[in-house]
Length: 274
Image (cartoon, rainbow, N blue to C red):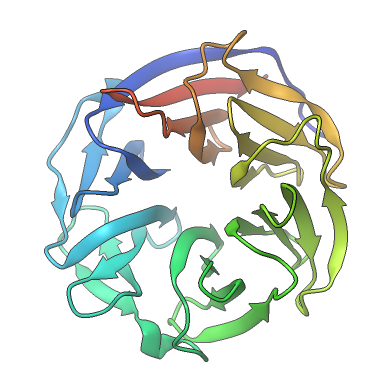
């Protein structure tokens, strides 16, 4: 039985940072944040109290961050000084840092990670340079390369529990699509009256899809049918242009990072489920 979403999701806290946020994740009751113009991972503890940052000296232009709760490790995608395509693996305390994936890790050197997602110990990298998805095992070995030549401007992808992939992209018109391991399209959500410019996705344990889209967050069911507008700027104090999402199943919280060009960028924490 699917646990219902709150009729009125509650804004629990708001955190402001001085730079454009490119990724957020939660692990061990800590919030980890990367920003486009910084080589640091910002760390926030309970009550949004900032802790010691984790410095990645070679990191340049980070684009996303995810966490594996099983191994207590962070994965950060971005550029380095000697390679344009990298994913770092970092311990939560920052004591162990290694360049885990480079352009030599994939079946093609023409890849450029723009976002990450993680299912159990499998890391999914969305690459917009060649409209592809790359799936890696916990040992860093490439498991799959899914070419999506019929799609353009891939933004983000997540793996479902039945080994399909849900992708948001903006080819011709904005879409959220589900594809199989061969890249064949299973279903598509592309309601132009509802979908503006989807930028990021999150899955809950029931297979429903949360979509960051312009000035709101949409909730789709597992068949990619719209259930409702979950958050918007008019009714829920949502900041303009939600850009990154992180759903925490244990606490039923959704972390939303805004790409608004305000002088102070916003990260909001919502309680969205009963």
